[in-house]
Picture 1 (cartoon, rainbow, N blue to C red):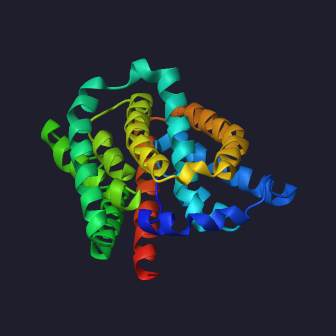
Picture 2 (cartoon, rainbow, N blue to C red; picture 1 turned 60 degrees about the vertical axis):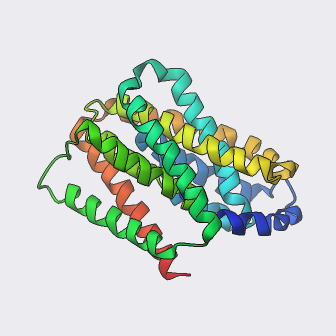
Length: 267
């Protein structure tokens, strides 16, 4: 998932106190539709919810609450996918990449304490756009990676997940070059996102962000839209041939990279 810097979130979380719930009917409907569409993307690609849900939520709720809110929803959506299709996950790939992701997350948390490495945000965005354009160009249907690629992708993905909440597409790039079956890819990616999001959710919990009942209530209100979108995305994935599935994943990676570049330029 995409997001904003953790320190800013923690400094401005008091802004959420002004939000009254439930939202008025029309804003609530718009938010539910945005969340449903976002989780259709998640159900297909296993990441990318912030691309759609983030801008929609920002129109109606304080920006400081979006990442902790989506952390709860992403973790729940990943849990649903794993509970339903967990046996299809590629456990060998998980064993390869999870240790690297964990180390990268620790490194990212350390970097976060030292400052805001904006140049890394731009570099990640440029890499994502360049890779997506290459895979969408028609020169290849998808890049094949060796097992050793789990470490660089896991480490860098963990770093950027901790720094920006935007490392999911790196896991998708790696898994897309390792797993041939779309359904197997989806549940493996969902498992990784669930583990990554759990780390962020625990940080928010320890920081006291979830002590505000309003975030939990809004997450509960949006849960049906999340479940509906995830179910639709799962059905779409099961019907897609591999080549078309990889094009969709590459398109989401492209949008993720463009969003990161925009965030860098907007600072």
